[in-house]
Image (cartoon, rainbow, N blue to C red; front, side):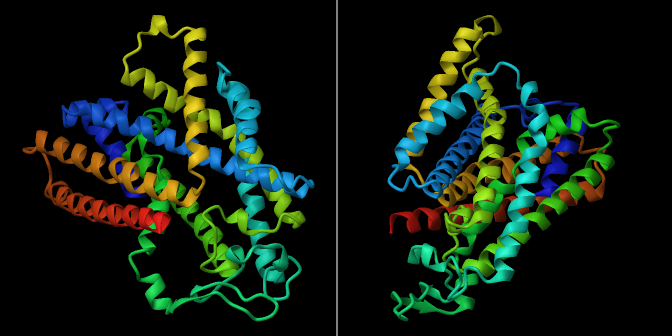
Length: 381
């Protein structure tokens, strides 16, 4: 992921471009509507994921507060009308800038809390919170077998080996979810252009450091979550923790605030993509028209979130389709075209790199296809 991120910076340098669309039009030269559409749908899927997270988090917080019978749809509408919509109607996001560090702090709090609960055994057999969880969310470390209740009863599903679990095609569902976690590539040209002293070498170094730090952080959360709950780990791991767990409640509050403040930043990309796709002239982008578009788009996302509640499926499908295109396909085609246009000046290493990126693209497409297929089959089974 980091390599392709830096590759986009190099493409911008080779083509003297400052935007994703501009780099595509100067290298590949045709089919830009596909690029615009993918970069439009990417933030839309991101907002859908955030709506699911907000709903699940607030519903758990309400249960902690004693409201146990609140429906998911009611919570979703509450989040959308009183939280999401007012923030998305803000004309300038500069007012949210001071809160940009909240997201990082929330994730650090969550990671530390998950580590504490793993070490203190609160969710092991006989732990203080284990009986608060439904059997589908209790720890299970045998493939196809749910956690035993206090009487020793288990749901008898087909039991497989760890080898079968970790090396089955279903592991590609996780890979597709990782696509979604690491995608920032649609903004790579902007980051490259706005970078101070924006040489390709400096951009590559900073990108590598950022992706490495993110990888370590994500790996820690994934490992601690799986070591705590095993194969019953939920797509939104906080759902595995008891609503009576005070540490988990702190995490939920922090995540809710973080996600709520992040929502309008991603939504702007979605709305701007709509304006670009339909080529709405700037003179018609009045406050009134933008408000109408915002209300319609938030309504569409909310409607989808009513029917789609599985965060893992959204991330797997979004990552396996849009993620594959934005991360693997588009950069590969742009880089190959940029090198082809300057073929007499291209070095041997650049020509070999084109072949390598083509191979990685094919691998990424295959992995994304199988991952999406398995995610949909698992959802419908």
